Amino acid sequence: MSDGQTIDEENDQLKLDTVLRDWLRRAIATRRMKREDICAELKNRLRREISMNMLDTWTASTKQDWHIPADAVPALADILQDDTIQRQLLSAKQRHALKLGESAVGLYSLVKETLGKARELARRRPRKARGKRPRKP
Image (cartoon, rainbow, N blue to C red; front, side, top):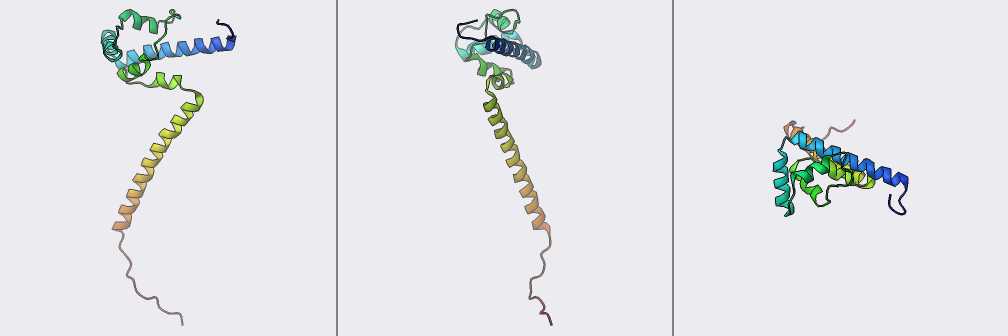
């Protein structure tokens, strides 16, 4: 534990580290991409050597001293087509804002679709003949 760090902070960091390692293992398995190909793609994007050993230490629960480099996170998310790791690194406030933004896009699409259908129905409806109303006696 570093100076000034509480036990709770250390536990939170350990939990986050475990979540990130679990995510990376699951994302690799889900994507069904060869680890060699992931390393090669990371090497291309980051312009530095990424070995199989490095990838293995990032996923190993026993290698707590080895962490995924911050600049590798967006590349990994893109390569593995899974942005879960980036979402885990957001604060609660940022995650909430992201959900609101995604909801707004969905709501906009729904309103746009509904208005289009309403306009189409209005065009199909026969118009009433316009004329003067009969006067009341």
